[in-house]
Length: 463
Image (tube, rainbow, N blue to C red; front, top):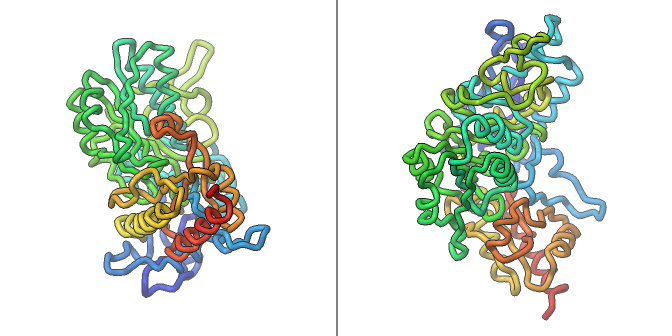
């Protein structure tokens, strides 16, 4: 019976490749428990949660990511600083997905044969693991293709069922396009009003005085947890309280927060949370929408077809309830299994420690590159709640050229508007370069990056 497991823990006292189970038989001794027509998968870390007095062993962590050993065609060692776009994947995620395809590939929730039962068990076991990681129950997690589909699911399945011309949706200038365009389209179709909360371009934070005005009379508030450009964490707790005082529902885009912060959904009072797997060690092509139970009952069908129906006849169709209503067609089985392995791998870390590690590298890097002539840093990575994103520009080297010159040194960074053009407009720039860090990045890499950027600027800038 296929189960999910990860191969190692990464704190002082454990070897870098210590297996989670000594043998497949020991692994299979963690039996599945019958739940209706599928079995519930228990995913356990044999060593339990890491204690706070065991510091992260970053070199050991890096050993779980085979791509980090890669050399580029020019012979340079890869230094991956594009984690806000997508993270790299630990070997256990790659192995879990490969095992599914090589040993029990089958469709889920459809047949009674062995492979189908194993695929269904793994799919639902992953749901158990992922929902538990985010502090909620499996029936409040809807699988999606990522945060973009999750936000669109709210737009189509909830907003079109509950909002009309007299309603107001509140957004911010720092939203990703995925949390802007769906609401603009809804406004065109239904006449709802869309309000945008500006940022303070001096502090790079959300203008909360403006938010308190914009939220009045609102029905839905959509806010990014952490900006993918600025790395700024918004005051989500205050935003939720102000929105709920107005009777508004709250949608949080948690795509950039999930790699370095845990959310306890059931305790958060948030109505919707959109998450992508691929930014937190999981595969591309999958994410989820976390939804309060009472809110899910207000949602109508989004995509229709197989799996989400109870009955179909020439007279009409009846639909299933709960998350099954929104998971149409063949599930993302391999991707769910991979994500389940990723969250199990992350369970061994204290996320406060992970965040501190990332923030330390980002704040040091921002400080050092801001000392380079012509470099402007956007955001404030010195804030203790900022993420690992450092956006910057040079005043005479075009951002695309700068990114290519950094790549020549082996450094993978992002360039462009980062799917945040309203924020670029507010900053008065068309694009930025962005270096973004995760738990496997090191201060040695950051120092090498600053040294190479100094070289590039000295060699290619207008003086």
